[in-house]
Length: 221
Image (cartoon, rainbow, N blue to C red; front, side, top):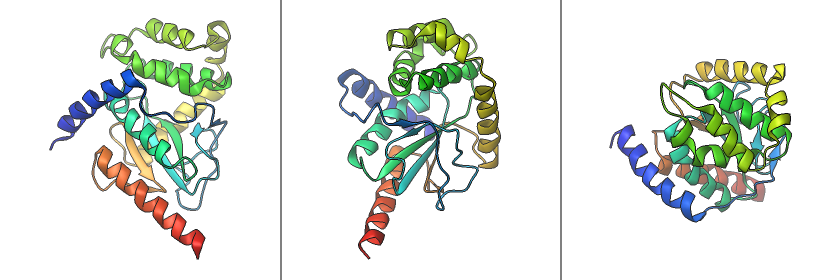
């Protein structure tokens, strides 16, 4: 099955999950930044990156993510499901890969939302409305800003925060790191520093399961 076919199937499933809210994970558990671990190379986990889940979880999913990317939107319900399966064992580190036009501004919206402690609700709002604002070749970020406002973002404050130099610096670092990681598309996943054996939600779930079981086995010894 081709990557495009996988994405189309995943998009169909994603539409159902977005509509029903079947998979839920803690929306308040976004740390200010990630801490490097021995199991992941430094260029995969950076101190400035958003973290969802327990800070000291033994298994780290690193996702190079583009808010304008259809495949990232399609994978989001699968990632939520994995996080819900292992609430104490897995954390998610978000790295930005703004490959599409307008994605840098969308990242700024997300980072401004993180400063207001509503990163996950705004991320979900941007993904849910992505087909309306992330039109390839003609993105309309006003729609993205409005979606973020409806999700609870203080727009006036966020527009100021979006201009902070540290956001641009973090984005530049992430862009450089995905090149180091040889990532050419989004989403690109690593689990405890290990790349997926092939692209797909099943492969991601299986690698996470393997790492969780290994960590649990190690803790018993």
